[in-house]
Length: 578
Image 1 (cartoon, rainbow, N blue to C red):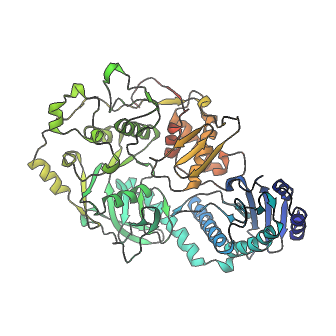
Image 2: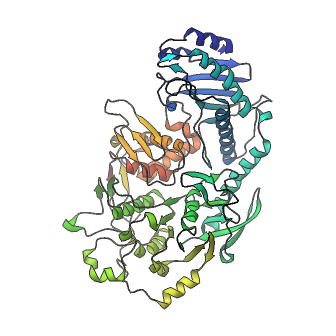
């Protein structure tokens, strides 16, 4: 192991040399400020993206100067490491002077955390140490090393960042407590939903609106209207830290969220889709939770589909095209929505969320006039209105649907919530009275067809992370797109992905999942095995190389991502009730 002075001398010796000489810096360095720096992986080019470099800052948890928290549960440990990641990121923004040279020269940072409290591998704790995995862009002029700036970064800025983010004298203990308690309360609250026959809970005084359409941060308290539950749907729950909270419980079954435009329907639905995650203190949605296996469903034309049974919704296609094993490279809007539902059911979803704004109209309903013009024998699609109740009764899968223009759904709803000026009202009785007063003229279609799911067995040879040059290539530069081998995987319709770190992890999880594709394991079993490994061993397990760029994702997202890889192939099991 070297010390700071040895690092300084090494930097001086490579000043002005080609950037590749930076590789000589890889080693361990003991800093007098109370941390060890492991230069683990250095990009070979200053233009190389941040994920190609890893610098590990390691501190001793027994050092009295270091912030510490003795976690008793997994969620406490996750919240603690998440908190440290945020402190380190903010310290980097405040202290590092940013780009100073070509490419990523001069940057010190880690992956930016969002509003969700997630398991991350940018901060890893053991019984003895706390390790932060960060990226430093060693500076260059063109492709020549600039050692003067590198010295400033490594020997001045980095120690100050470590001091600001890991030394307890610089960390607000009250902020740490609130962060951990918010995560523990939310996790507990989500765990109570099933026993209360609920799919979601929205606390009174929660602030649901976000700052903007491109920001997940909360709207200011002076602008946002606090949430208040209608009395008929009010639930009281005692939380470990916050004590008794009141709010709106959304029961299992079929729930409609209706109301006029711009009155908060989609805002409420967005809260439910984000409710699968625990949120940071001050987010406004700390006590807004949804069933963990909640899936947002939408139509998305052009997506890849492989050997999926969509016959519960689409059958009797012209020219006898089989829909029990349907494949296409370019699904239509209605077909993509049918596929998305069937894939969600196959992967274990328990709640479906839909917003009419992103649904295919011809998939959601055929009204009585259209039924008169186009007879059922000429229409392959069985619309969702005729299957939503069956989905709940046969599969115990609830649906929450935002709908402002189709009253026929009153006939199949269990609850109807109307949003007026961002305030919810229980209008279930009125909606059902209207349904009785004006009975629908449309015919229920496909009454007897059972809701079967035909399971699929993934083929490992279809998961190839090699590019056209035969090089291993997995990368993500944006939340909804993964570069995997020769393919770009479009995840635009996976609206519950929140952070780039999740997307990066999903890319590597695709490759890792191959180990369980043995011709016997179904897609769901493959995903379950991967998620179990992550639960037991941590998210590092999905890659052979040390990384600091992964965050936890759900098994649902892994299944959905596999299905969107255009090389993905499966064998189908015999058609049987699942």
